[in-house]
Image 1 (cartoon, one colour):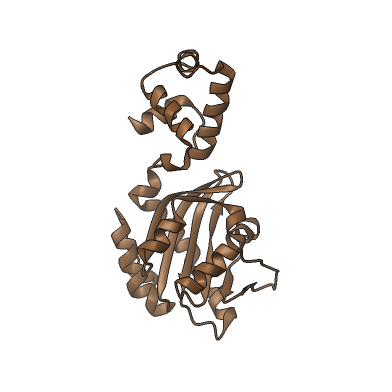
Image 2 (image 1 turned 135 degrees about the vertical axis):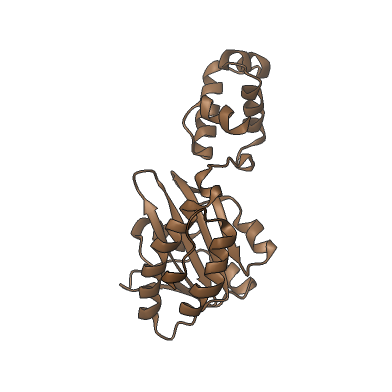
Length: 232
């Protein structure tokens, strides 16, 4: 499996070819999801998403970001950084830590016939970003082997996803913004300073500043120049 890893100029298609070929032979599964994203407070913003076998409806619901309190298993993983298995209504880890799956996660398992879902990933605490991977429809007759395989696979897929173009380019998803916030972004792209934006919208300059701080937090950036550079 490791000898078959793609090298040099890795694309998402290269990653999928390896996942659906050599990796599946080593670690049987029905569906795969690999994502690279940032953690912004209690929200995960997805910058790159590579999947296999999932229907469009599931991917639309998974979206480009979500609040961690909407997904109990992922929230547990972010805090503990250990592999876990979600099967029917029970989520477990190798150390037996209690994991409470959210109603949304349990609904997805049943509605999309996911079977047993095994997941893990890698988080870089220095940049509050990382890779989360999950496999649906995995055999779990020997959970200890599943956990061991996830510990091997996670850093490999993390390295591959970092090499893809989407993960390197922090694409901004404006759909996470409110209508008012998108309006402010549009005015910023016109080159208007805070004072002019405040006058245009009949609000205080302080309120404009608060809006932009919220916008930066949602998009994973820190200043106006990043916003305009990435959107122009």
